[in-house]
Length: 338
Ligand SMILES: Cc1cc2nc3c(=O)[nH]c(=O)nc-3n(C[C@H](O)[C@H](O)[C@H](O)COP(=O)(O)O)c2cc1C
Image (tube, rainbow, N blue to C red; front, side, top):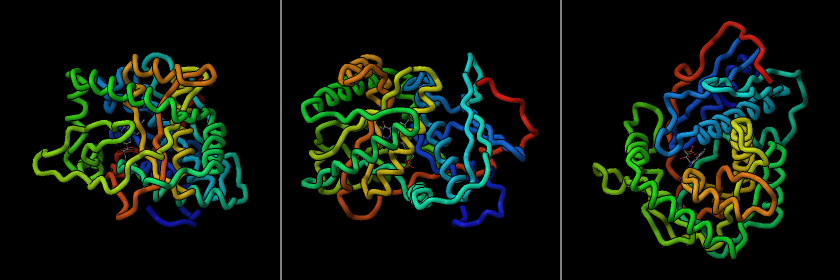
C-alpha cells in the first residue's frame, strides 16, 4: 500500500485496499468489497463466519464495521467526505453498507493522524506495563471516539474487574468443551501463512497470570511454532472498556465495529496499546454478566483491554489477503434499503 498523499488513484478502490488493515475476529477478514465508479459496497463473507464461536454473525459484522471505518479514514485523509449508508439486513442479505464520496473537504490534522495510526495499529496481547495508568484525558478521548461512531464505552470500574474475570473464565470453560468452537480455533490459529489470514503464533503470548485472562488460542507447542514473549508487564493498570450499543441488531453490530476501529485508532495515536476480548460476548451467560455491569441500558459488543505497552519490539504483524482477493470491480448496484 502506497504512502499518503496520492489522490491520483481511484480513492474508493484505495479505501477498500487500505481497509484490509482492519482488525477482525481471528483475522478472518470476513469482508468483500464491490467497487464501481461512484460507490464502494461492503458485504460480509459468510464463508468466513466462525460457526462455533460466532453462530449469529455478531463478530463477523462487527469486524466488517471496523473495515468500514478504516475505509472512511482512508477517504478523509485524502480530502474526500465519506458518505456512508448502512443497509437494514434481512435474512441472508449480507450487504452491509454503501460508501460514496460526498465531495472534497480540507484534510484535518486528525484525519492524517488516524491514517497513520491505521497503518501502525496492531493487537498487543502482552500484559501492560505496571505503574503507568491510562490518563483520564485519554479515556475521555476514547469515549468521544466511540460516541462519534454511534456506540458508547463503559469503563469497567476497579471493583467490576473481577466480574469481567469471571465472565472470561466461564466463557473459556464453555468454549473449551464446545467442539465447534475448538474447531474454529484450530482452523484459524496457526494457519498456513500463504493464505494471508488467520492468527500467526508469533502474535499470541503464552498464558500468564493477569487480572483478566486472555483467550488461549491453543497454539503453545504446536508444530514448533513460537508464541511471543509476554514481557515484564502485569495488566494491573489495564483499562477494560466495554463497547456497547443501545440496540442489538446487525446495524448496531456494524456500528460497534466502527466504534472499535475509531477507539483503537485514537488509542494508537495516543501511544496506547490495545487488545480485544470477545470470548466474553460470544458466550450468552458471560454477555449477560457483562451487561449487568453497564450503567445505562444497552448491549455489550466487545471488550477492549487498553494500557501502556510493556516495551520491547512491537508485536508481530498479522498478515492480510491480497487486494484482488477482497475487492471486485463491479457494475453500478441499485440503491440499498436504508
Ligand atoms: C471482533 C473482534 C474480536 C476479537 N477477539 C479477540 C479475542 O478474543 N482475543 C484476542 O486476543 N484478539 C481478538 N481480536 C483481535 C484479532 O485477533 C486481530 O485483530 C487479528 O488477528 C488481526 O491482527 P491485528 O489486530 O494485529 O491486525 C479480535 C478482533 C476483533 C475485530
